Length: 69
Image 1 (cartoon, helix red, strand yellow):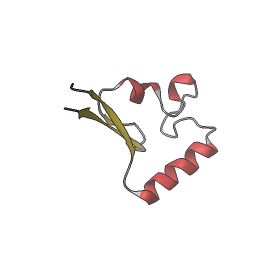
Image 2: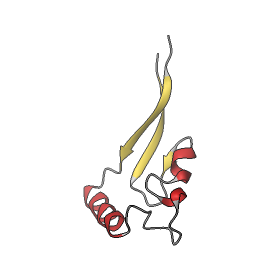
Image 3: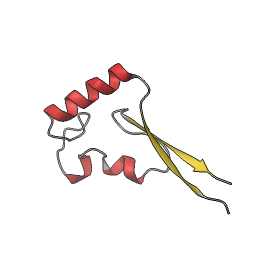
């Protein structure tokens, strides 16, 4: 049976991750890259959740497709 899905990982740059997390905390959990604060920009933002694969806008998370066998 084949199983497909997605894998979400943190950016491998630990210093960058720490900086973005500080900014998220200072911004009440909203994406620090967005001027708009609403449910769509709350981390994990709607844009990232809906994408098939790639990096979120602020670069904190990376989503990749996983193909199982």
